[in-house]
Length: 91
Image (cartoon, rainbow, N blue to C red; front, side, top):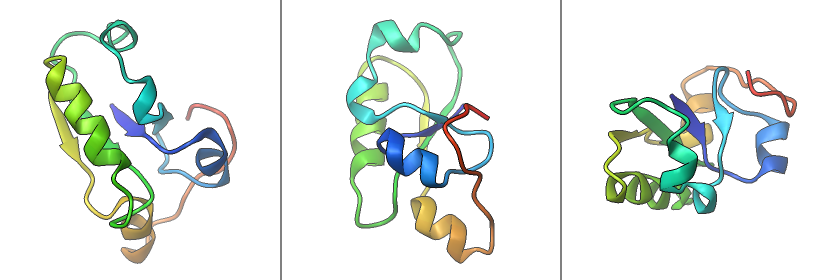
C-alpha cells in the first residue's frame, strides 16, 4: 500500500499513481486496521528535505505494521523521469 503522507493540498497537486493520501499525523492503530495484518506500507513525502515519511514509518513500526521508505519522495520520483497523477481522488 503506497501512502503519500503529505497534506491534502500537496497530494492534490501531484502524487504517485496508486497512492492514497494519509498524512503522518493521522496514522493510528485504529485507522490502519482498515488493512489486513501483514500489509506492507510504502511511505513517501515531498523529498529528502521532508521528514514526514520518517515520522510515518516510525508510527507504523510502533503499531507493528511492516513499512518501507520511498527514498527521495516526490522529488526523487520526478528526478527519475516518472510522472505524477493529480487531483483529490484516491487512485
